[in-house]
Length: 292
Image (cartoon, rainbow, N blue to C red; front, side):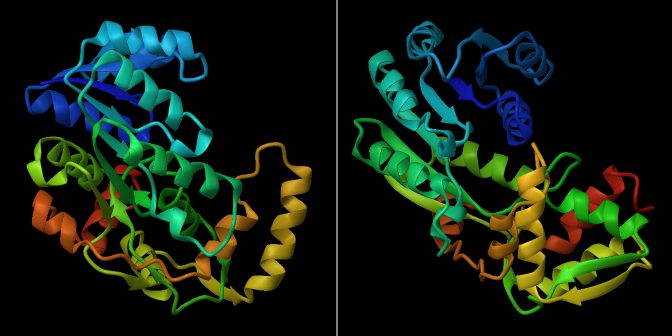
């Protein structure tokens, strides 16, 4: 199958491209820069010039790709969903898998939530044979922007303030398991016109997640549990003075929400079998050089 991938130079993209190539797919990846082109080439894909912010170039790239299927890994939260749907329809690409996020289920109301939900609605209303996957927090390798930072802190920091949300549930998913689900969904007949949660095998309390991360890096960090409200206040001030804040208020508030998701449909239709969190996070710690 000839697959066109958007977002191929991102964190998840590298895993999807390498897995697609290993399965024998002819893989083409949209690239907006020379750096992106080099990245996707290194992962076995053929780059094709295109920019999600430039509709005409996007349409031309989709037509030139002559793809049998579209795999959209580019964030739907940046408003590019409608343009990608329209370009796929104009190019006559019949099959499409879109990666969204379980973050759209939050009780908070960030702007990206509305954008993503609108994109999902447009996908469902399109003429494409679509599938939507909603991963939870993705981890598993350096650069995951989530647990890799926590592992480094637990390895190096003598004292670490942590939000007092010990019982709140989390269900992280390994990046390789998400990549497998994307490509399995592409060929699964039952996946057409369906939406799936892509999460770890079971939800775990935040306190257990912290203990597991500390154990795999042999941490001696003293964790000081701090009420969420003062941490949120500090984060608001940090966001005001930082151009590129590494921690946002929304992230802290989300820690106080249960994030548990059923994966039975994905197991049934895709043969989805995610790895246990303790196995995945230990492998990540080894990749980071933080565990033997």
